[in-house]
Amino acid sequence: MSLPSTYADRNCSLARALEVVGERWTLLIIRDAFYGVRRFGDFATQLGIPRAVLTNRLKLLVREGVLTRDDGGAGTVEYQLTTKGLALWPIVRSLINWGDAFYSPTGVKRALRHDEDGGLLDHEGRCEQCGSVVAVPEIRIEPGPGFEPTNSNPDPVSAMLNTPRRLLEPLPASRAPQADESK
Picture 1 (cartoon, rainbow, N blue to C red):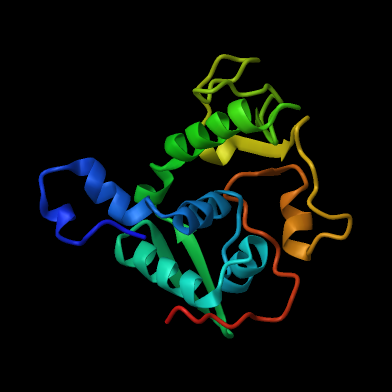
Picture 2: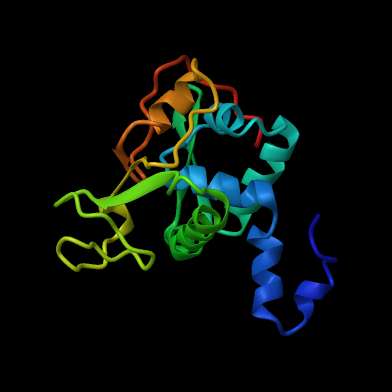
């Protein structure tokens, strides 16, 4: 549930930011966009989100300039993070780190590595191998020691997301075009 709309009119940047990204589903959509999910049906499959909720959240993120909506023709629609959306990475990374620290006793669920040299990234996104702060497109994500598959026969989207891959790398189109209900 979002804050009352009149609250955003006050002089508080945090309140305004929460109006855009402060809802659970919204942050999970943004996380999955970093993981390479781009199509409506893939978001719906991966998140188990009601289609009407997904439609509303995608419309909000496009309206706010966090995602772009690309009608690629042939019935395909893809969503991509904008510069404004990419600026959310430190927040998403911090929340993941916080969740791993307090809710994953067996270790991180997903490890972040510098794709160039394989070095693990610390909590600030610095490569432990070369010392560089690694840009989002250069980050590889892979199952970590605390990763626990939710079932032994994952859906195709989950299976792709559970393999090592670069952030922002789009998932391959493995199926027929998907209906996009967020028009």
